[in-house]
Length: 417
Ligand SMILES: Cc1ncc(COP(=O)(O)O)c(C=O)c1O
Ligand SMILES: *[C@@H]1O[C@H](CO)[C@@H](O)[C@H](O)[C@H]1NC(C)=O
Ligand SMILES: *[C@@H]1O[C@H](CO)[C@@H](O)[C@H](O)[C@H]1NC(C)=O
Ligand SMILES: *[C@@H]1O[C@H](CO)[C@@H](O)[C@H](O)[C@H]1NC(C)=O
Image (tube, rainbow, N blue to C red; front, side):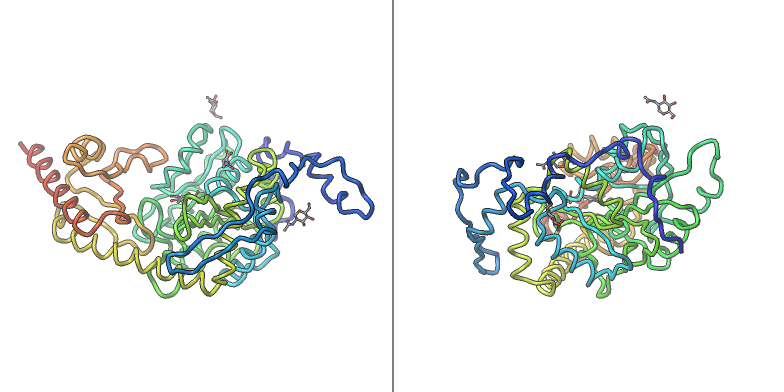
């Protein structure tokens, strides 16, 4: 255990050059007794035409955002997030992950916002990054234009393979700077639908200590685990301050409200706060207030109950998908049964490259899936495809897999001719 005190070695040139906003620095002075502030830039709240807001939950509960809360929701507020929501989320993190150090949180407009800011904080153009293969396309979309070297680490039915990670680190070409971070979706990897076991997480954390890199734990499916016991997070085992954890309300409350948050060591979260100051100022006050209003009504217990129900919903959809897959795709495709989330990763047998089949022939037959190459950091040719069982009905899933099976049979037949 080596508690990290100085994070300079991890920061990109651009992040290091960021200074706190001059106006925001005045904020504490406004609170001094007798101070007459002509310094701030807050619009006058009496000019906002909105008074309060009421809404109804699907269970019939009526909630109201009071005039007072509404005034705060409509005004500029703290960069890192509404203090009351930050407090609620801190409590959630403490109960769920029992972090071993005094961490900070910054709320973003979705986890994608704070995730992309973390990438920007750590990486210079031309750097290397450790990344699981396959990887979430939304992360790749941000990283690709940065001219990075993707050191892609193979995964299997249990996520990242620690031995492969160790191999890459041991055999490092020392003419290149060593990687400062690994990017991983440890639960229900998008696209694979499977997660990393606790034993693997422990080993990967040890490697992060030994080779001194940051773990970017992108975990929007954490609460959608199908097992009774959730697998502990990297954040929960972090003793050095080398994990940045990304959570999201997108899959449990709403994706449209755009609320996600990063938790981690203060110096790193503070760099993301500085970026927010220079970018979007803060996540939407209305969205944050809306979420806070629901979370206060529920409490952490009610939130967990809702998460459990949501996970059960997806587990049922997974079972429906697997039933149809076994009916039509045996011998034509292979898969690992998803343990969380909404995706399944199919390996098409007898097909070398899924791209034309999925992008052209499947679309002609009116089945939409994502070809595997999109998820490979280095654009490998692959027989994989990603399917989601989230929104299609049982009948639609069954029909789609029937069509896929017929396509695969045709493709294999025409190949052997
Ligand atoms: C792995 C992963 N990370 C991040 C995101 C983005 O989530 P958010 O809506 O919180 O920005 C997604 C959304 O699909 C995702 O699958
Ligand atoms: C919000 O901002 C105020 C003024 O800058 C500061 O005093 C306070 O500590 C901040 N609260 C949180 C939770 O960050
Ligand atoms: C959301 O986050 C992105 C990425 O950081 C940023 O560019 C954008 O301005 C933000 N949008 C809003 C509405 O805050
Ligand atoms: C990308 O990075 C490499 C290695 O650092 C460098 O040689 C090359 O010029 C860079 N390309 C661009 C387009 O920036």
